[in-house]
Length: 119
Image (cartoon, rainbow, N blue to C red; front, side, top):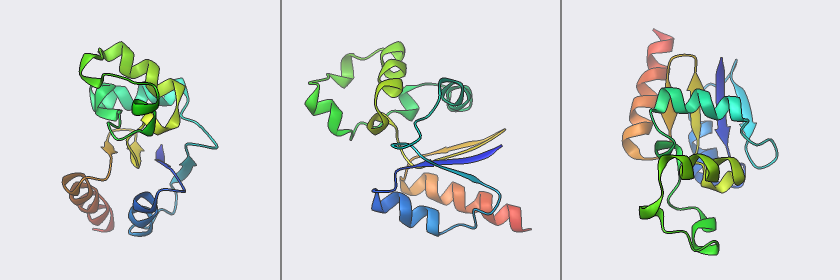
């Protein structure tokens, strides 16, 4: 399994996706084709927590007046199933690894992963 979960209206997601050869990867636009509960469970297993998958930049946090500091792990899971904007993105998911979000460190690890595929 090789999947990329992204948002097509997110310029950062598109910039990151364009950096890599994604031939053989399933591309999933999470607004039009939301993450399933099984996929979320797979992500959780590799990430170690739902909080790791949660975007603290979601516009829904302010709209819903959510106190993120007060959320428990089950709350993160519930929110992730309710609205696509709660997901960090992009997420690159394989059978054994997960790369979450667009922070510099994650992108560097992702670049090494793709470079290793070429060697």
